[in-house]
Length: 551
Image (cartoon, rainbow, N blue to C red; front, side):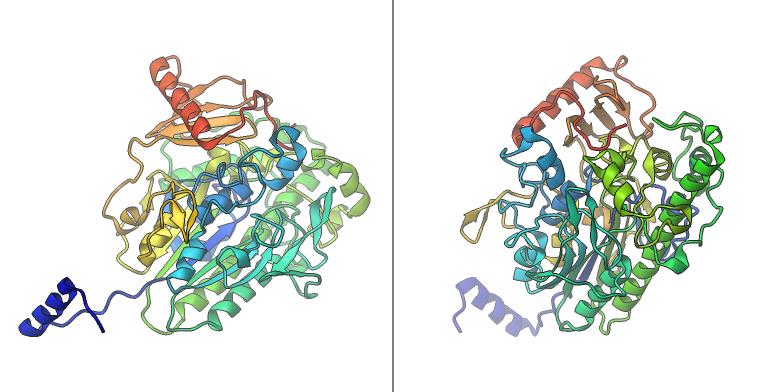
């Protein structure tokens, strides 16, 4: 064996002084857990009445992140989590279904509807570094060969390639134009699912199978992306009645209750309550039969969340029971805010749902039903934040998030540091001791990572990682930019007025008090920075709201 002069000299020095080389620290096992359309206040430690003891236990032993941000919808967030890059230049400026719907986006750079090859995924880099890489659940970053999880760094995978579908083995899709959900196992499309398939259960079982069949002497990265509680709202029959009667008081009452619990937990000092919910009738004005239907929708939603929590507990228990003393990094979050859009107004969905599914009250939540929660429950789920999924308001992009690290974790249990989904790959790579290659990978040009490692926050060596750094958002024409505690935001009608507004989201994360009149120059600065962001990322500028299912 040949050594360079410096290496040989170092070895001689060690021999002379009788020193020995220490074993390098073990690389951690890493588990990334993602919920789908889970609202900010939908788990216990964030103020929910829904029973989530296993997620809450992660927070008790870890770090609760109260200021974690995603994209406004699922596909863009998943691109951020896999690449560490803003979703626009890597092909996921919007979901594939949205690009199909909006002709102006078709054929434009960045509007591919799949994660393009300008991104190298965190799974690829970990695999190159010797990690075993596994994925189960919702992928939504490409539904054709060449763009499956198996093509993007995952050695073993069982994935829903599209944006959603039935939670049972009938595998119907979520849109009238795409009525069949596609599953892939590694690089092959799966034609039939087992009869006992239920999304949260099967994703957990397959993840555990991959982990337990792996090499115990090598670290692993497991990405488990649940489709709960994404519509259609369905749960195993014996779980349907777990929350019977719990939501009979309605959505405003639920929001008030959750805000009070958040105050008791010390999460927020004085969040507003009593403001009318956008686009929602007062509960007491609804006929009793409609109240019964709406309440049962939320009952099923809550049961889906609790069932997912149970499965997360099984997964974490298995990971914690693995032999050896390898550290473990577990990260949990949602992909965006709760769903509040009118799903029946997407294309011909209303007619399709009425003709295809049985939504009678006594059948709600079963395998042949098709339900969603709507804006009332969504705004309660997002409490105390403003609006919900698909909007750049805090209710659409602020997610509950938890990190548990068995290495040198901070003693703090709650952090309000600003974090973004693009920070997750940088954090994972940092924990694993793996470097991002920058602008080239194996001889081809790629985009450098945008995110920053949150390990200084997780380990308590720094309180923040984004001081003074502008962070931009855009979806469906709606826009936002955050710098420090200040947020400039423009939301088009019907949920906004098409004007830039300014909020101090440290003091007012609820986006109630517009500060633009007090600080017009600051607003101008942030708006200018947003346009620089848009130019840099190649964003197509809509001058209206192009979102789906708008009321």
